[in-house]
Length: 340
Image (cartoon, rainbow, N blue to C red):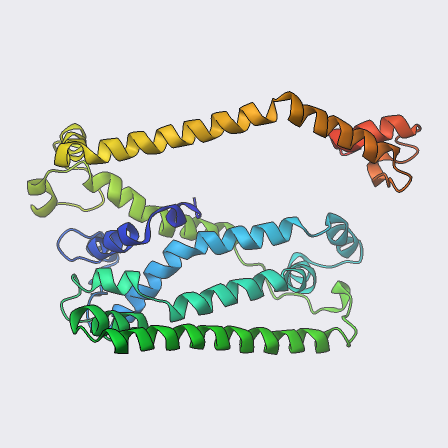
């Protein structure tokens, strides 16, 4: 669910949040009204920065989550088991094992965030039309270059700004990587205490509550989109709750208008995308089932099992396995459900 916002195009996500911030049919008024408070205007000049920050966080958190998840999957589970035997708590395992081992992934995320910050353009440009003067034309370096090149016809100046921005991105990323590499090299010279030596945490954070709030944060925009896509224009601007359906449901008529717009151009796009996906998957399956591919995989298995340098994993060693042949076959089949 957290990864879903990343699958939405940036332009559509920015437009959706622009409507969500609206006082006319956005859900913020209903949400803050439950607590007896008035909704903040994130499209105002004083709060537009935080509104853009929320849009970027909502869209890119899922992408960064995948990077961290892949890094966590690469950690040897025996480290957790050894830490628990030594008496480490869950928070000590997180602070002493997980975070140090996923530090390269965190560094990669910081580099991506730095590059994205210096290249910020799509979200403020889309919300500029909805923010009523809260976002000037020089709000970001990219917007300033766009203004000079395409609004004021200063193509040379706009090209110079773009080139300088690229150089700044390169220099900033290089300095950041160099500084973090030096810091990481010096940290390895000191002895890292065992997890049991870390102080005990004062208490446990209610992770279920935090995860529940995160799920609500990521899913409320999708729920708002589902609800309002069922309304007509009169129902959308005619008041009522922004988080609940109107008395009449107009899904079919809205979809009909969408797929018949401009001679059915969106229907053709959808059909072409589905056709390309089916053709690509069919080609992949045909190639994997071809005799050439099958003979290559069989030969690689036999060569690896007959190699003198073959090293069996722990679940394939005695007393779990007594013959080299069975060990080789299980090497390619993987561990059984019991892990042996």
